[in-house]
Image 1 (cartoon, one colour):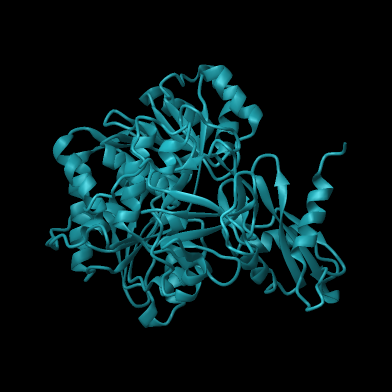
Image 2: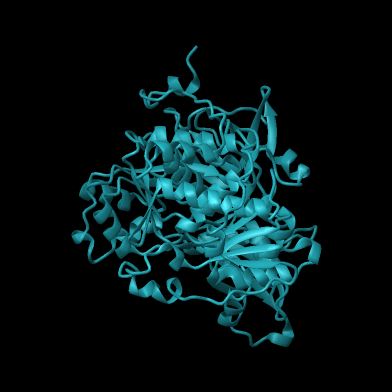
Length: 568
């Protein structure tokens, strides 16, 4: 009997409707391709290349060191890094050590990091020297039994040819080439990456497979602290393998790896997909449009998973005509809708269709994806391989017909196992429909007659700033600690570049009546990641409240939308 996917007019005929996740672990993708393509470049970073054989060797050395630290099956190990080869090695080493990766945004500050360390019960963290002090501060502020016992610290120079640093862009040399002093852990040891790479520690027997936990990425909600999402090797492998099928990835694929690899899309659909395919990742630690154009041209990049703001920036480069983008076979991504005018420019100038997709941390990234040969603009796509996606009535729970708006729910092998130590939140998010477990996305949308899904609103109050998720409750809790602020409400404001940005509506205490907008912004910047910092602060005499005393954030959001709406 044909599946829903196969009955869609736009379903890619070359693809099956579903796939079975491999029974093996994420490590096996590397082990297999280290035998198949030992001398192929797995990674290229600022002119330095790492082969599959070298990647396996480095990962095994670090795995041996982790085993010597006492890491055993199921233990959580944090990785806090910007994109670099060491991050890839760390992820694979943790998998080889039978442990669980806790990927953390490197923009987090000590107060935020403290929660990840204690909640995940992580005793070991792997990071870069520019971030090590913040992690030490976070760990040292915890009770000794809750802090880190080992911190492995790398310098970016560990991944660059010591005799040739000409490929390091001048604007990056300050932070890429600086050799920072290592911090101290109050109740633990700090180790240099180079020493870990010299480890001759015994490797444990491989024990983990499809049903074991592989990743514990954290995602914030509308209330409370960030929650860990329990993703198995099978969850991740399904979407890594599925991405290679959907995007036509082969061992000859060269991927521009600029999406953050702490983020679920970059981690699964770029890094693990490339390793499974036996392709090559050209890694960028930060976005830089000129370097991106040069790397695409130099290495004949074929696949680029991106976000619209990067595409907009590259197309605005005065050197655009000097870049050779002819090697690109796929360009796409998600996080925010691609403006129609930009997509039309991509198609007209370069013959490239921007292919949008949709997913969540809770679903190991992708659950909906536009067919590469028939994408629709500003559209989430059709159900991905193995996915059953529906529109459900918010109140009654009944499935809705095409064109009717309701909550998007998804079922598939990539849906997570629940929130770490949060059975209450798991029960609210995972629901049973027709005997199958569905993930409530919290996003409102509809399905058109062709089977494509569109998003129209959010049940959650999440703000999407250039693909980064900002949760108002977290920033409001921060603002309440400011000595000048009596009340605060966070809303989103339209931004021509970031899509959305963070706006704070605040009531100031009489004792601090003269405080300026920039003083609050600067104070926030010292407390949290830069993308969470309010870009706009509006002072008001009072916040609108309901009869029960709750702040009516929707009223403020609607007012903001009216103020920025074009006249006509």
